[in-house]
Length: 76
Length: 222
Image (cartoon, rainbow over all chains, first blue to last red; front, side, top):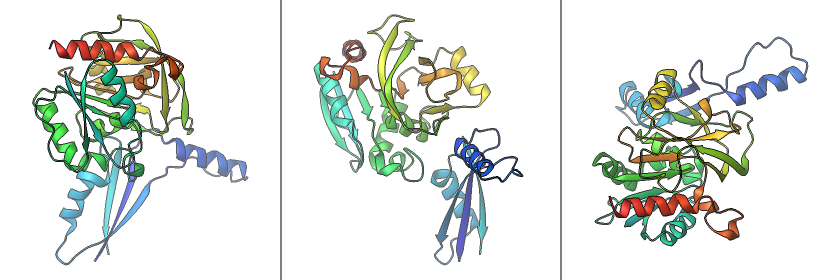
């Protein structure tokens, strides 16, 4: 089983990289973008028996810094 | 006064901070990240600047999971003194020994230049070499030094006198111009500027020398 963890800066935390991307899109003529947030995706190949609860524990302890980031776990 | 300097793969200010501490009179031991204990009788642990573990995942995140980091955390919990400079500050926030986090600089650029700081707290052993309100010239060199904490945490830091240094002319977007903060017991200091890079006339500035002189002298008598 695979787990896909998406880590994003929390709402309200300034994302200067997302802002830079928004400006660059505007410079290319894409005017229809109100905002950009940049995050990261971490894919895990899970051993048999490793479940969502353990992946969430990984997020809390290492994969995300919950002071500034939120995370989402998808299993596939 | 005995100090330990932690060394991670990618640390690059470890020797600089050791030189500054020794010059101020400290006996310094370097401690590799795979060690799981500090030498006996350590008064201060310095977590140096650099790019521990290549800044992978988040600055300081992997270093905070290393064996020596657990020993540093235990030392702090026992009431020991810990100084984190630059990447060391990031490691201390990842260890939750200090609140908040260091985000990418608001201007997105890596900034390497000398800035002016104001000494905001004298109620701790770290800043004994300075007068309250003194302005000092100290270099910064970082990409992720934009201090962030939620409003309640910032209010608490200010209310408890735990802002140690503030930028005059905020270089990186840090909330409330914060350049360095103290733990609740005042014994853990994290700061982005590098006093060890302004501790010798050859550095082009010596305002950081008083930082180490004051701290080492105060800790020797603590």
